Length: 95
Image 1 (spheres, rainbow, N blue to C red):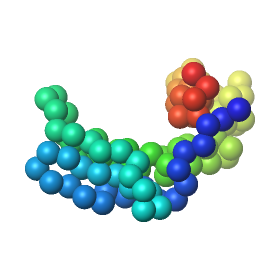
Image 2: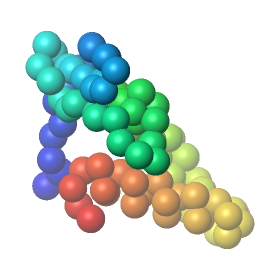
Image 3: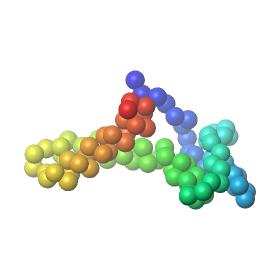
């Protein structure tokens, strides 16, 4: 069973000197705080893009997953396919 994330577009709604807020459907998804070793706004952009990235990866797997998994493709293609499956499983809470 896969977990479900908040649907809809996720956007950066507010950003000040220390915090960046990501929302969806008017509700806060998360607040990204300033910390050492990372760019708060870049982290917030990545979080906000997560649902679109997951949907794109699922679409790519539906379109090309069986083709890439065939024996006509090389090891690098198989490795990409494996990483894609693992990323989807992680996003769905299956790993």
